[in-house]
Amino acid sequence: MGEDQPTRRRDPDVQPAVTTGALARRLGVSPTTLRSWDRRYGVGPAVRSGGRHRRWAPRDVAMLEEMCRLTSAGVPPAEAARAAKAGAGRLRLGADRSAQSRTPPARSRAAGALPLGDVRQECRGLARAAVRLDAPAVADQLTSLVDRHGLVVAWNEVMVPTLHAVGRKWESSGDRYVEVEHLLSWHISGVLHRATEPVGPGTPAPAGAGAVVLACVPGEQHSLPLEALNAGLLELGLPARMFGAAVPAEALTAAVRRLGPMAVVLWAQTRSSAERPLARLIAATSWGVKGARNRPAVLLGGPGWAGHPVPGTLRPLGLRDALNALAGMYDELGVGPRSRPPAAL
Image (cartoon, rainbow, N blue to C red; front, top):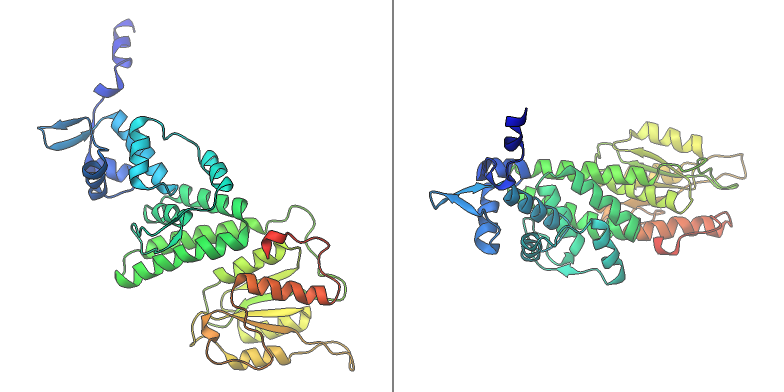
């Protein structure tokens, strides 16, 4: 036992080093990225085999892990490299968030790996984490965004721009980046679902008014915007019934008659899926006793409805506009929530 002790206490820097390819797989980045960071920012191995081949010792690996963590959080690569090399970059994201809450959100024109354009700083970090398929970082950043800025700002200014950037990259790269969009969409859906988890008894429909029905038109699979609206309504204390993607017309009309909703929101992403006859049918659906029949307000959401208005329906411009319109309907009847977070609208 005593003879084994020196071996167990060997210096970390003399432990076996790893190759660039092995380190890239471990970090979830490409070998080209590691070589680029080495050339541009000096974040490279202390020792090279034969003077050329990179061999990464444990301390080099720790430095690169910190570099990846910082860039995933939205820190520009040059700043992340300086912090990682100086050993001063081990600040928790909570400290970064605290500092950001005291100053206006930084914006960047750097495109990075995705065509982001002029966006909030948080978009860059979320995009980098998504491209690296770093699921824990994506989930952590999305949760932090909603907690720090509220649902509307997080959706409009970070989630949507990042999703659009991934979509543009996918369209211009053939079948590449499909997995990035799927991972990002999955985690956005997850954080929206967590935002609607009840903390007490469920929200009933106010007396004298029904809930809001949310449904995608038949054949439409893009339900994320409706999930955001559902979360926003519940955040305001307004009742919603979420039916999700591709709801058959017969099932939707039957649900409307059964529920007697205050409003129905129909989502269509493309013109080919926007069924105007269905929208007119829902708007004409009534219930109640003769002489006191009620009909729902119908809101048409999504770009699919653009260009061809449906009489008797509303076309909200986005999440904030839809929330304002729906909350106003309850307020007009005097059955809205007693308190509404002002930052939500």
